Image 1 (cartoon, rainbow, N blue to C red):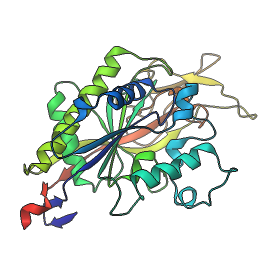
Image 2 (image 1 turned 180 degrees about the vertical axis):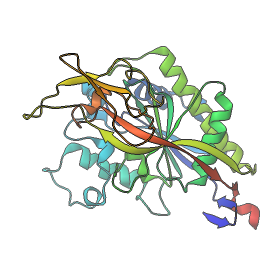
Image 3 (image 1 turned 90 degrees about the horizontal axis):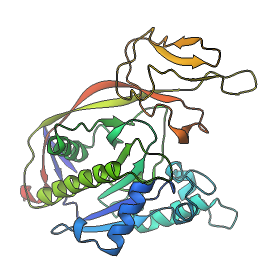
Length: 317
């Protein structure tokens, strides 16, 4: 990428991957990717090589989130550089294989874009996940998608945080994009969630095709929800959960949570209220997969990011 004042110039996005099955019980992405492996006409775009790929086939076969460890946290420098061997967890071996195919991570040879398809049990709707506030290409794409599906909403979750490192499967690409769609139970396929994911992917690929054809995208602003903190359930001295998400908060992803608002309901009926400073916007509320991570929900804060003019680098020649 080359930046000139308020202009961002990128090479064409010629190599694109669509990941499904990073978590083996999130059925929308798995089903779509398997569909496109059999017949990829729907995801073909002029001048773009689009590769659908099942990232965690053993977990998909077992319809479980993972086999040994969470693949979507396995793409650390330590794991990717670890000596190969039978003693490595399956997902670490798989991360190394994926890095060889679509990376190497952080190198000029890495794939241009990776879309990683996920489902959540939380009421998050269609959520785009952005890993860097400085990725103007992704910001422009997300702005395009949000306009294309309006008046339906499409929140953008920015996971950039100095203390929270995710090391996701999509982070192998130059421009990683997560798509989280819910609510959908684990191991279940819901038609509305399936179609919502499909529509967002269509518009994302349309953007890439238009960008490669030389269309210039003017400056834009994108409202995002920046990850702020992780909230655990109240627990006893033995670490056992002793409360539930409060009914007033349940299913209220992206809605404001103010100091004093109900947050948890103890098993005896007592209400635990939010005592933080200022308004936050919770998401991943009561996500089933995050019980093991000791996480009841994530708090975010709203902000607006600005992307400059975006066009292909060859136009400067």
